[in-house]
Image (cartoon, rainbow, N blue to C red; front, side, top):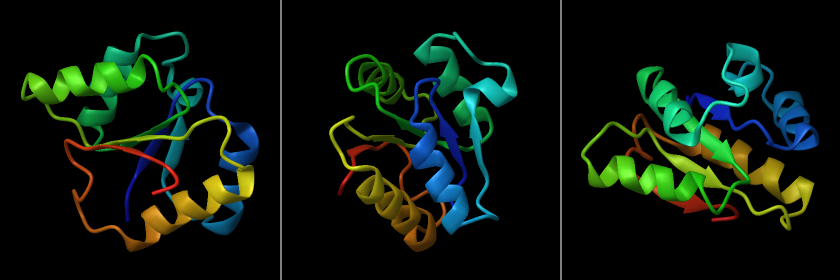
Length: 116
């Protein structure tokens, strides 16, 4: 199953809903692993080291940082950008779908917006 890392400002209600639906899902917040206030580039570096797909609402800077990693040929397990305007229930359903239906490394070097 896909492993996730949520960005610092990721919605708590979305995360709670995903955890409720998939209690065994390996999903951590940057705050939980000592990355609070770290730059996007460093968060993506740690995500790559831990083979975690990043979930973020930060459409402006996180996407640019991820694209830079891809352009440089650096590891990038994947990034899902979820606009703040996406309803909580829809975001939960989309993340659950990605988690359950993905194959290993399917999202590597890819940036996607949710909903798909």
